[in-house]
Length: 283
Length: 191
Image (cartoon, rainbow over all chains, first blue to last red; front, side):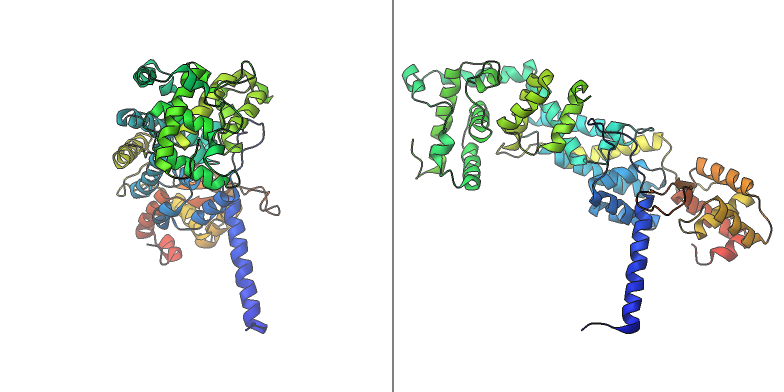
């Protein structure tokens, strides 16, 4: 039933007041001062701005209890501001942020030895901690208030990349290549490169989403990590074994091996994938 | 301008723009930033491999998070940003009044309104300069915090600085309430 007369007016007044209050707190959110690499001023997403404003509207004592539900960027904002000095307040915000850094970073250290993964995540934590607690702001600090998860992802992948390019990482891969020798040159020639690859052979092209899901299930069945990496890049992300354009990236360049060996890896991977997916997969 | 970016900057733009590490996306970014073609290829490969890796990571997440929290708290203590609950800032009588006025104005405290509020509380004329000086001192001691409204969100608001009481300020205010009758009369239910 519609309300009329005074109750309606009261409701309107209440809505208007809460809107004014909300706008008031939105206006209190400190603006970012630096520009992004594209030359445009940095801006927090609307949801983050509103989340910070909501938190600002709370009394100091109630903020810590809300840390668990806050956006990542809101946590950074409230750790950086010098408004609060209570130990429990910081414990709530800092504890939550560290938990999220570890959770986010752990998604990108898969397949690495435990010690290496922990070293990388620990370094990401350390670097972000320095940025969040920096006395003066910077463009890099402010990026954490714009897209925190992306900042964690970017830095973790950079460190994983650094590890993978290191000599001690490469040493491990040499052993993986040693067991590829049994395939003949003739067999290798039968494996197609480019065009509709095994992804197309595996499943119906019209069911791209299903295909992707199945591909990932199949990838899990590949026992050799190098074979799985090659299979991921080739069948999921579209990397060619050997690019037809000179100087363009391909699997042979990336893995620093011959196209023949890559084909051998993929054939081996295909065998395991086929076995994992069972019926309906033909060569 | 964007051609002179560092690789770190390029990666930031890449992360903001792309959600997939597909080969076609790699080619697009290599064309955009040919200087970093090799680094981009490495980064895309690592991204793709991690994105589709079937196994979970084997790290001890709880331990890492707990260690991280402990280190961050240590840094905050070293920076003097954590103030012990029983440490009460001694403040002058006038500063107590200023702090009370800021508290009572609930986020609308600027130099003018704080001065008026103190005059109302003490029934005496107060100079704005004195208020301004006290506000500055209280802010330096982290008892109050200031903010300038975002005129994009509130276009009608005046370009002025507003003050709010911090958590440390609230503690000092509670102490002031216990020692000053004027402050206690105006603070009412304040703990």
